[in-house]
Image (cartoon, rainbow, N blue to C red; front, side):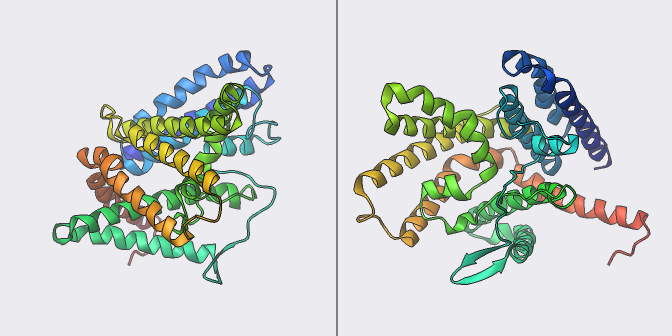
Length: 348
């Protein structure tokens, strides 16, 4: 862990230095191909940096922040598009927006969500999710005695809670130190009412906000004159899901260092096809013949769990990522205890 921490610090020093170049040099180059060419060395650096990390909890988020978010935002920056354009007045703001999972909002969301007529503070919800994640990790000790479907449910919950908590922790410095008002990264996906609602309005909204300008809008504009706005919209949806699948396969490579099997890309293409069909059916039948939100939401979550078990999880399980993740929790706890002892604090 000590060596991994040193590599982690080195990777982020290089990444931050590269973003300083983007802010002071590339930003002064006219937008378009010339700015893009000036950014090509940085794009290459971002692609190779996560290869120096080998743990799931440090390597995985770093690959996501630099390779997916960082590259996408810098490509948009090449053509003077948000979120890095107009250029932030502060270097630290530029760095935070470029590589952290944040989206600044002008209308800050309330610090609560409504559920069953009650208002629950987000801080309380996050504390509950942290406790649930700890209980799930503890439950893994009893996997040999659990039915396979129970283990699958644990994996699904672990993935959701782990991603949401990691993204929230990564965004915390930008919110507390820099004073950004941020949009939420997740919107309680377990309350979804459909596939469109899940992928478009509830699950990993940071990725959705990046896919729209980089994948959805260009394809929709390209096909609008050829297919018309209705079919061009569906083509944009399918392409956005395809790009998401390819990027997930790339993230899997950084995590497993195994050759892609393309199961994850197929998973997202399937989700895109089904979401597009759902949208088309909704448009045709209107409100009168739609299922209730509880029924359609249950069907959507069931479909996600079944297809996830079929295509999303197998590559991770074959490469032992779940076992590696569980072991890393114990290593991280021991490492934190070691740091606490070095600081002279008492560990209970």
